[in-house]
Image 1 (tube, rainbow, N blue to C red):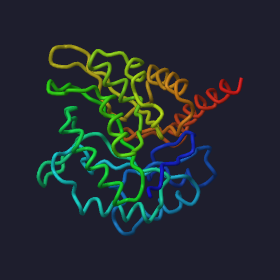
Image 2 (spheres, rainbow, N blue to C red):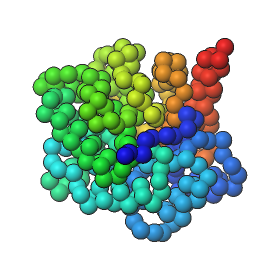
Image 3 (cartoon, helix red, strand yellow):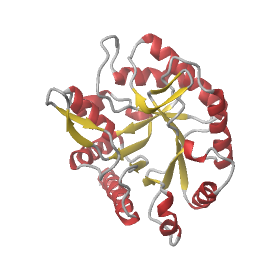
Length: 285
């Protein structure tokens, strides 16, 4: 029996240690905090002091970045066992990972790399998710990627791939709205058309983040998912339309570079909360 993901449908933020004293000096108007699993795989120290106090006062989401779910290699058993100990220690309301790969042989790459959407890949990803869920005894949420290229060998759309993964494994989904905006812009697609085919009924958490607009070698615009700035206005607009389609769901602000002062980050989460509140008011009207 899996413990199902159950974050409150409120705004949250990714925890940064430099904000700890401000967060704990008074109750915060947030539904949850999220941490990267790999930052808490040691047995003790200040990171666990911080996380233990946060877990007492708020719901917790643990977000993995190193399992390499999309790899054709076997999962790293040592890494997975560390994940298990972390989940058992903190009993988070949610655990998530990426639809990506990041390892080759014994090398860990500092990137979340894309994969082709084929039957072979589908079977391998489903096998890995089954393994993770069986070890953790917790439903895993799978996050849609920010992508910068498409594979000629893909035989299905990303939304079709994700729908089938959910059907085979019983996992949930983490919908990164910024990733949708970035990927569809890079590939010349329409984000609302993408969301119209996304299995929204299985989404248990949303991510929002900033991105950077650059140019590729041919001079064409290229969006990069950088997590180093405030959420862009068109991403907020897409998020509000997404919530209008599916209803309120836990919504996290990711800000991992050029980290701002705590009031700035908290305000981003309150902007997400305002969207969730409007959706509830509209549903009740």
